[in-house]
Image 1: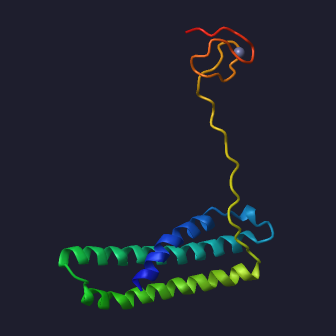
Image 2: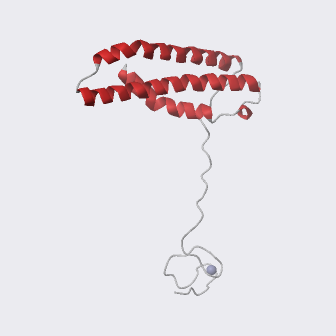
Length: 148
Ligand SMILES: [Zn+2]
């Protein structure tokens, strides 16, 4: 159980972000209200699992260091709550899945944004602004003599 939650806490935020980044304009064939509804349900489903997982793990870690051993009674008391919340998350998730299926929403891995070249900040020729190596006397491009 702990291991599953730990994996979910690591994996889910990325998936959640991917969904959060989607907008209705990515899916021109999906009615906007349906898209928004789906997105809300999907995010809610992820959020519940992520928060439960973080709280659960935090309680266990804190309990372990304060009490010195696994807080069994606390875990037993909290487990039903955890399971109910995960169940709620699953309900939202399945509702979201229905909308997703009905409208053919396909989540593609985000396309990598083209790398924006960082503006050149090294030494430049005083005459033509071509990038030059530090200490070079003559510009290789225009032949201008560099000061300093
Ligand atoms: Zn130059």
